[in-house]
Length: 260
Image 1 (cartoon, rainbow, N blue to C red):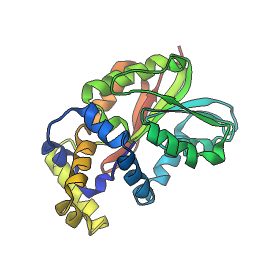
Image 2 (cartoon, rainbow, N blue to C red):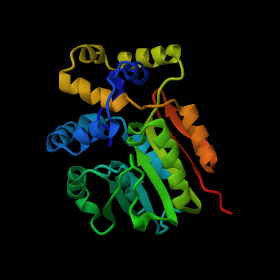
Image 3 (cartoon, rainbow, N blue to C red):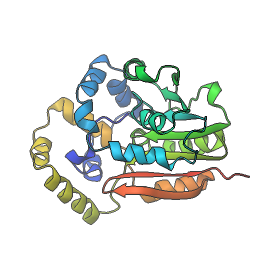
Image 4 (cartoon, helix red, strand yellow):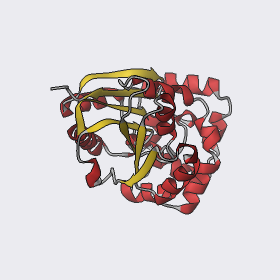
């Protein structure tokens, strides 16, 4: 459930100046609001520009043969953009899309109409660690895309453990998410490249409306560096942990539950 592109300002720097507040309440104000979802849908095409390749790679990193039948879980699935990449890559696959926004799920069912019969939605609350009973264990694969960064560091660690416990032996978890820079010099380099790629970014940062600023601060508040997240995956029990792709402030990373 990504609310904006990180290319409009460095995640780490903005997070340092973000106003304090209750994470769950702020997330709900965006993702369980008819107005918030309408705004998100209206800007979807612009926001998704440039992400298609990364989502295809996330699908290709799954270990299944091209025509194998399997079911994967997309947590924080939103309207199912990541699920569509997997469903396109594996024509016999089925998706369980888990989200907590009824508005996002309604929009997802609309845009996923071409995949009718290959997907279904279930409700999940990642911030509270409440999973539906049907996802208790034996999962073939779990993916997440542009949603885990909304969680606190403690909840990220908890979530990785919950995913590990629910995967079948040998199954993979892969996450595509923004990451924070490990230090100020790296952050400055990322910002320099982003502003060169998008000459209008600096002006947009300087002229956000109050609503845009609130939405931006909610987006960056809990973005974490890559290294500690890889460590958290290893601590949860995952093997083959790696950043399988990274460009500036976005990465695809994950690992698998050991086969035995």
